[in-house]
Image 1 (cartoon, rainbow, N blue to C red):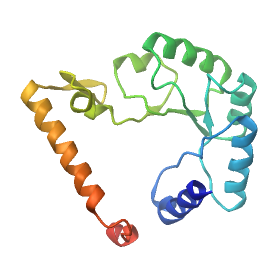
Image 2 (cartoon, helix red, strand yellow):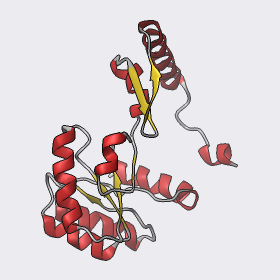
Image 3 (cartoon, helix red, strand yellow):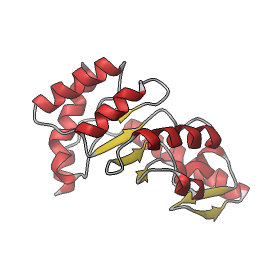
Image 4 (cartoon, rainbow, N blue to C red):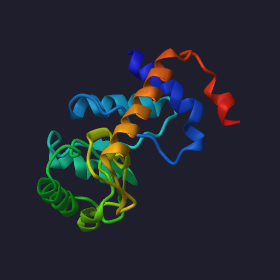
Length: 178
């Protein structure tokens, strides 16, 4: 598929420079296994994704046995209380020595109660993106955003998006990193 070809190209280009990269998390559990094995057979080492709302609990145990690091996906858009409930169940089944990374979850104080080691998101831009008055990063509120700031931030994001749309699509990114 075009997605897999793009993924392979990017990982091969930057893979040695990053701490890890997430597998192509698509389809059911068997599809994810097949895709991951194909990537591994080509010499890659993607970090597998367990999606608690879709994957059976046995799949979590399987991933924890085979891999030192796993990602938890599909929980970014659920409530904090539901996330805590799910992650408590994950903790009961996961190995204690498995590194757990939450996909799409902005680091915030409630996360300290979760059995995870890291998380990622663009949530630090949430104040601008969603018009909120506070923006969080590194487990803290980092900004009190006025309506004027929100408006200017939105204008900036739109400007960057427009420039990106007009930019040449075929840039040599490896040259940029050297």
